[in-house]
Length: 338
Image (cartoon, rainbow, N blue to C red; front, top):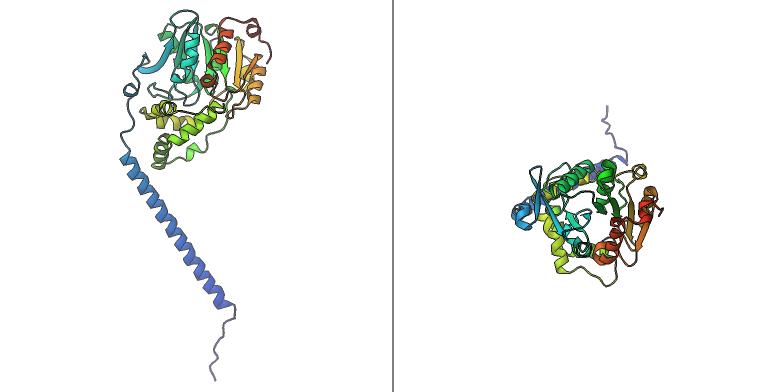
């Protein structure tokens, strides 16, 4: 019997070849990704080792004053020695030094204190960084400094602390001013939960040491054509990022999303209130400010040619607005709608 040789189908050989090439390509891509991962990780580790030691104790970066609260140093600045008290709270990563012009103007007739709420400014870092924690720290700091029934001004993220303090102790707050901040919660912090070492440390050190980024953000925050951030401005904002524990504090805060309240909470406020907003704020919308003013039954003040950092480019207008609450203007005390 003659031997019969099977002849493969014409399509079999090319299909097998394509599958083989596909598997080799996948292996090559996987190898490249693993190599890239190892190179980036090694570079990040080397960079972190080369830049270690940049973090310093708060006292070595800021000469004070500080006040001790629960065994930790809270940094603050002050203007004026008499008159009804005004407490100024900055927003996200806003150092208390930016309140200088406003504090000087208000200090003519009031005792003014700007507090660095951790993990911002030069206060020693301690968590958890929650709204309840900030309110408790604010109240304890006020007691330590002998401040009673202040007008509390909260800028941006600090607006939530101002509102929450009025809800927690209505009799202990003379009035509140929301400056470029709607006091509302937002986001869920999902992106920050993905942060892994050593990459987050490398990214933090690169970004917080990048002068161009700070200059760009500050100039945008000023919101006034022709007003640019100077080298001194950049340095003033960069330095607090070197305080020990700042990276961990900011990451902890970022995992929560934007800390704040609900509009329903704002409607429960009975403390005299005022909402003040830069007309050219590109970080938080004017509409958001108006919504919060309506919920608070508070007047709404719009500052022309000012952005998110209205206290820097329009200190006189901000000081006049705070003075309005401090002097108990009838339109504020009666809760006139915005």
